[in-house]
Length: 386
Image (cartoon, rainbow, N blue to C red; front, top):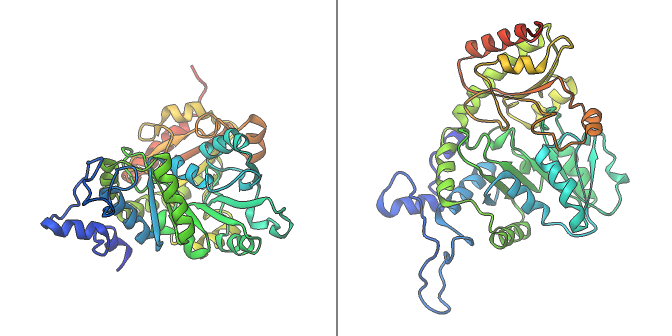
């Protein structure tokens, strides 16, 4: 069954069986917090909502099937999914991450790892990292590809092959791509995490996270953490997320079509010094084409020296100034003061998160309107304030 059919029809999952009971086309929301049992020693699959819920489990099965994974877990946020993965590791372990990883992930590792005896290092480029030289304390690599906010592309298969020779677990945050464009488990990754708040939701109205694995031992640990920490996704949000996923392929196709036009426009504009997108650097474009069916709908740009970022952002009318991304509406973000404010100033400078860096999440509006909005803002940003 093709992807754009699976997002709507999932007959082999629990969702399909539950629908069949009354013939409902849409899986109902199971709100009950507890379930009556048949007697001592005859306990059923569902006992208490924290340990399992039919609506959430149906979502987890759907997400796993779309990922070609054996196991899926739905969490209360993307950071809840990421924190569950970090809880797989023990004191003395070190985790490597992209140097321009999402600000929330950096905030977690830079503030909470030390309390648990974990270490971390930021890697400038995983594509050139010498894994053979890594010390035995390195137990995992956590990569975003493309990364946030500089859209750096990492060769997942190369990293996975090299990491596994050292017994290192490979975790990929696949939020920007989703399983529609990229499937890291097929490329050798051990764990895939998502902020499902973004493209899977697509409407800026659900906070959710996902973690997908093939390994049974990892799945058992994640299930234990989900139940013990109590960070599973609520039934209502699980239902809403399943509904949103049904239009994921349609939305992503339109998102990317719009983005390709915006990237070409910005690359040719004299007030734009640089554009960050997976298709821009030649070497990264080749990697992206080999491992992904698309390039996504997030891009970053550096405004020219004469263009004031505050004036540029203020002039936009269709791009709302907001954190997050991946929804039907277009958004503009200033990483240095918003999503990546947790990065110290010296790290921002080293990584390339400069004051003139702007991140755009391209929505599904009419492309002519988006280009016109960007054009007038790029004209306005160079005028002297009055």
